[in-house]
Picture 1 (cartoon, rainbow, N blue to C red):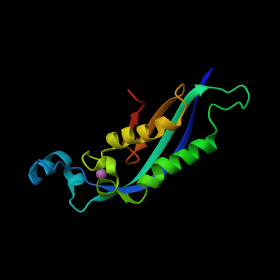
Picture 2: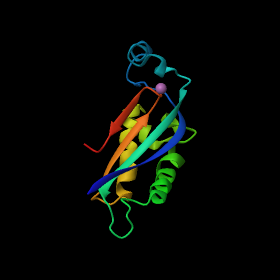
Picture 3: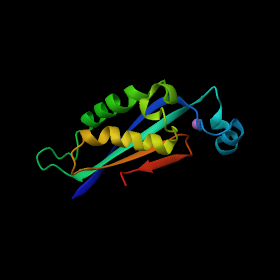
Picture 4: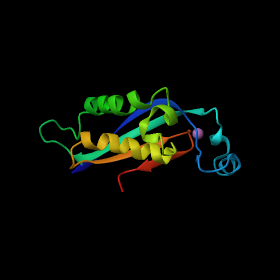
Length: 136
Ligand code: NI
């Protein structure tokens, strides 16, 4: 019996989407407002889900306190109130799009959660735009 458990979290961060090897005009054409050289912020909503067997002893798939602390130490501490381009090493060379942020979050969490459990990362960049990554 595999059950999916989910924990919601939140962080605020600034970013700019652009390619250094493109002209400002080309960046403006592709990334629009997100190419603002002075950066801009988002209120990111994060949902991390873990799917696995229910432990017959505890009745848990995963202790949610452990998941909460993991999200805090691996994601919130690294991203919250940061400029993603300038302060998060993973985005030195990679555009901090919602897609790439979700993949980075997945890989930060994956080593800390037992391999027989599946992880899904859902990241809302705005209340209407969200991406999902589950390791494929
Ligand atoms: Ni943006």
